[in-house]
Length: 429
Image (cartoon, rainbow, N blue to C red; front, side):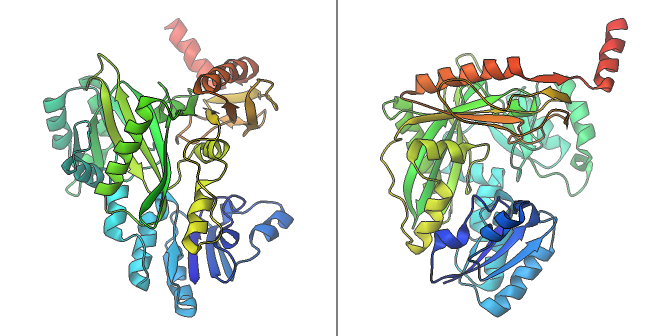
């Protein structure tokens, strides 16, 4: 079989030619940023491909599609793989142009457009918080008039928590409108409004093979959310245990959502579910947030490997060609968790190289002393991360708490001169 792969993930993690196996021609178009800097490593990760094209500015580069079509004239591809969130629609357009099977533009839109997704899920009876499309200012005002504050506003085709804002009171609205002048144009904005919920956040990850859900397993982020990392607060996640009553509830809800959506036959998926807290807007209970036809970010792939013994993207790719896909255990082989430490504005003075906390499987420093930091814009930005394991979820969460305390004691971020001057002016005002 002849495959075309559009890639922007580090190629040390995505060994497409190896995973798809011998007897297949695999052509790769990759973001230059996905290649290792070391020349020998670069040569190693590019081995095995029938042809490779390396492009700069992959995200916004329209030449990606033109190049793919030109390569198709020579190779006559039979499958096209575009696993990144931001390549799903690009890949669907190319499949239509090449007349190859796979996830269609209509199917992808149901995953990429949060309003389209939630509209389908609502019809299927999946529990959701109130939501509405926001094209113009009047749409947002009408939504608030019906459902009140606080309200979450997010891009309909966003990712990585980019552009998400929470409006707590009417006083937040004027500044929000200043940041979104497109709300006053005839074409309007492409936003979604949703009732804000004080919640516990779960993510549910898995893989579809030939239309069958082969793995679906939940993890809890507790009271930490993807928005926290943009605020400079660390987030955490831990695999749920099989005997937890919520585990089966979350799995069932996610499968129901997958069944409702016009999804692909083969993909990795990542879903999010809220559990409301007593007294919070929306009340207690489970509410489905969204689902994506791609791997979850922020070390989730690594955590799942610790728990189940394999990487979901490798299982997905090997299953496409029957190239010795790994067996899937019915439940985690061991409990695992993660914690991510985001940047905040300032100069990184001290950050530890190693972590002495018991239970830590791996610790990585992603920034060096002397680095000038700014607040995270994506939920996957981090200056350090840790993966932990344990016999029980409680052991994992206790280890994460110890890592959290240790890291914040050992790390020093100095305010920038501008921040210091602003604080001094505020103190003397």
